[in-house]
Image (cartoon, rainbow, N blue to C red; front, side, top):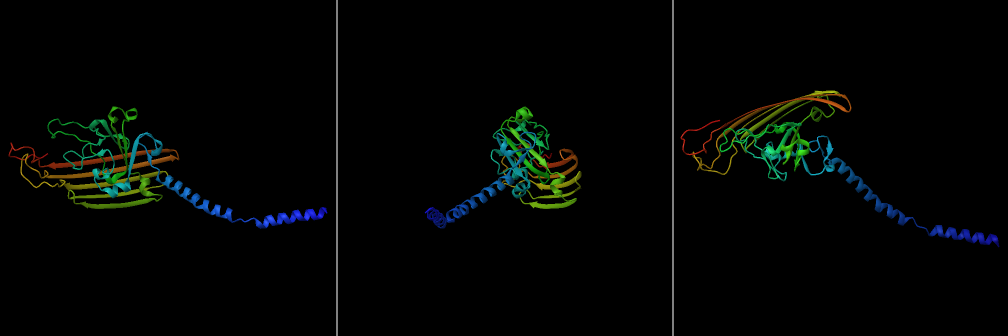
Length: 301
């Protein structure tokens, strides 16, 4: 009798095992697997899209971890937008930069309506010269120019007050320009050379740049030379007379000669020494025909 009961129990267990189907579990695994792959893809994209900035905190930091309005313009974005400073920052909100090279440079930057000496401009952490207001005339204006665009690695924009880090001249924000390092061009190679030549119809300008970088694991060097020649930026004005009635732009000829040299030394993984040399020689000739109709002569600066 006991054997029959035991046999009945074993038969019941065998029947239960026979009725068990693994298909619902398999379906659940198949349904969850794409979600896991999607999560991993999103994590990889987020890790790939993270921007590292220096200007906002004076140390390398993740832009997403910092408070305030901070944006970054990469070298690739600048190449796609154009070779002029105004083109490089054209798609950035709350940022305005004159496009015309004018008489003494690219002009001053306007961040959220604040400009001149209330917006700090940095090149590799070095402050640019202060803007000097010309008063009623612009013959003695001294604008703050920016580096040669082809030399830039990225542009960092900090909107809003940054006086706690940089002082009162950063109450409107900070515009930080970071130039290329030898490692950016070498990319694990021992030697890298290249050149770029372009012509732009906006101001009939020609821009040329050549570079050479060399080095190893500890010592690296970079030399870049650039030149630009152009004329006035054309507009829709057709009245080319002398005086205040003139609507055509004043005839302008400008030439820029730029040199960037860097030497880096890394004695250890966490220690880096960098020596930077940047030189920019800019000359602009302006035939100021739209000054007034009281003087028959032309003035060139």
